[in-house]
Length: 189
Image (cartoon, rainbow, N blue to C red; front, side, top):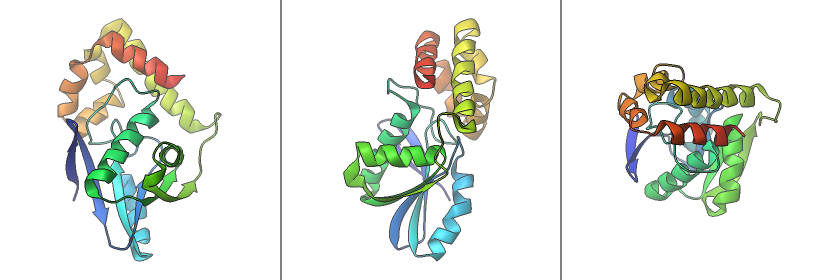
């Protein structure tokens, strides 16, 4: 069952499974907790304590569109804060696709948090991952510019994030559409 940590006013959902050597698993794309559970079971059986982190903008955690250089920086910042709150550092990072990039960023930005890395299919600049994520940002920016934040709330993936966490609707609607569009364009570059 998911727990919630309020980190600087942002609700982050997470689960901890098993006991043993601590590891955090971050799946690829914008998958949330459900996908993380798929890998948790074999890791628990192998003797790990597995933290599944529902990244902002990827599942039932709150949407966070703030002035960070990239969405990966958002994810790393909140994961660092969560690890400090849970007193789970240092931890092994296991990441797949975009989660592999997050793992590398954590090692770079917060080296004292990371014991080691397990990287599964890290993406390249030409990967489907970048195409999907880039489209998400570009569509969000275009809608915010042309039709405002209400239009953003009505399309995927934003509508799906609202379905998983209804408070995300108000979070999006309270954002300035020009600032949102600017951040989406920055994150897509």
